Length: 115
Image (cartoon, rainbow, N blue to C red; front, side, top):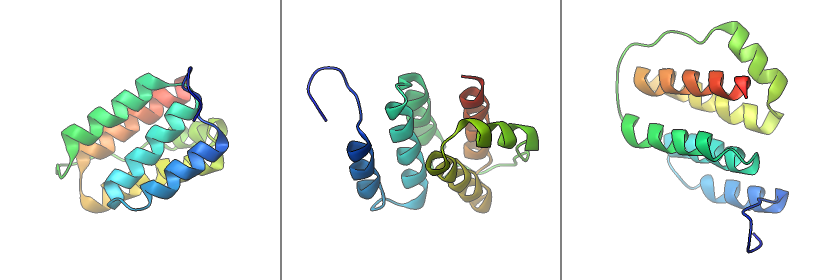
């Protein structure tokens, strides 16, 4: 990454994603999404993902399924590599029964498609 303004190049993003693969699944999903947020110059989404990571680790609870329309809009606005990480994060939270994480991700997806 060059000094000065924080711009992630494609090579930077790929290098960060390679490092992310070494973390546990929950952290991996959120860190990858943070990298995509930074590459789109969306620090607020990155901060929200970090806050979600801090507050929901290991949380359990009920969740409501994400609306199909929201996922369709996400598919229209996200590149395929970013979409893959949103889907991984949602399915992991669902498999773990982590309703707090799942609902937090749904809220952030709605924010992502609105931007």
